[in-house]
Image 1: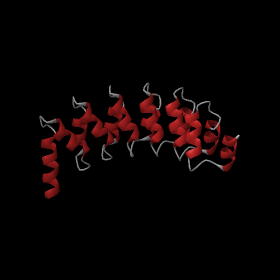
Image 2 (image 1 turned 90 degrees about the horizontal axis):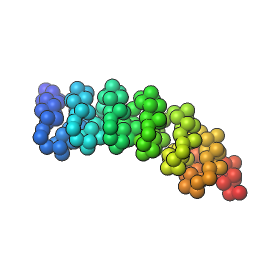
Image 3 (image 1 turned 30 degrees about the vertical axis):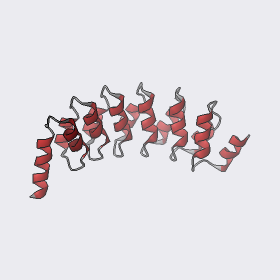
Image 4 (image 1 turned 90 degrees about the vertical axis):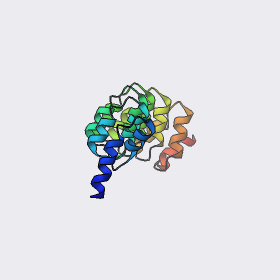
Length: 171
């Protein structure tokens, strides 16, 4: 009974005039999927971003937010621990480098996406791939030859980098 009352209270608070209250509801993992979808349409970016980061947000709502006009909301989706791989593939093509960096930081990002983003034109995206411990050894080896020092430094710091690749970096 208490759980039902809590859910009803959160639903009620989702329509508060106060941004910080709606933010709190959007950030609450006990918020129902229907309420999270309602908040995904909120006029305030900070509220939509909280929904994007919430690990209780259902995939259909994350898919909706992956098309948000604000890059910070899309970054939140890319960083969400439960985001489906199909959405990560979609966000890997985002025009904003920050969003693509969010994709590379997600532990669930498959090697196929990391391989694509290892060739990104933006140094920060390649650096994030080099720093991701899930990046496959062949991609780390490729990034060890990157012209950008920050990318090579990311490879050197990565615990998954092989001895052969570290030797390549020393030359």
